[in-house]
Image (cartoon, rainbow, N blue to C red; front, top):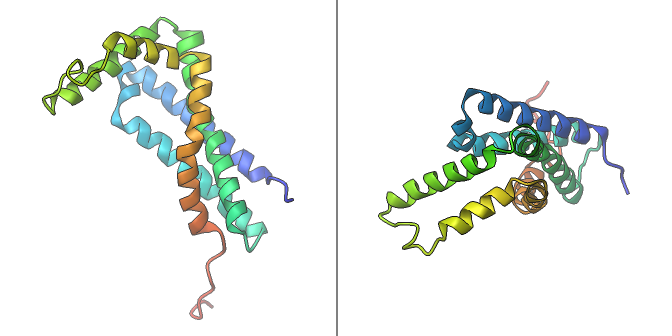
Length: 179
């Protein structure tokens, strides 16, 4: 069995630090920015870049790179990089500012209510218990909640890794026009 190349860990570490620093910058600019539509895109883009950069580096040394290995390396790199997001949440909501858990949960609920109102549906009409949701959101910010979030993210990341691995499993064929 091939060992895991160091570049996967390096790329994952850099991606994790980027996520942590990016979220810290968002927090410093505006607490509400942590819930903007851009945050999910930021995580997605960072994770995909880590997967792609890792596989491109590994592919230089291991040509051809089979699909199974490409998938596992992409998944590992992306999953480790995403840990930066969870580390930020643990540090912010459990170490630096535990008092912000309630405010964060309130913002999430406010955004959800506004989104549902645009469809003329209220939270109660949809059968959503706001107090229960508030408690669940606060719990999700705990260390255990962030661990569960990180572990469960592997399913979504596996879909991304499948796509990245399928595209990058082997080096592109050389063209007859290359010099």
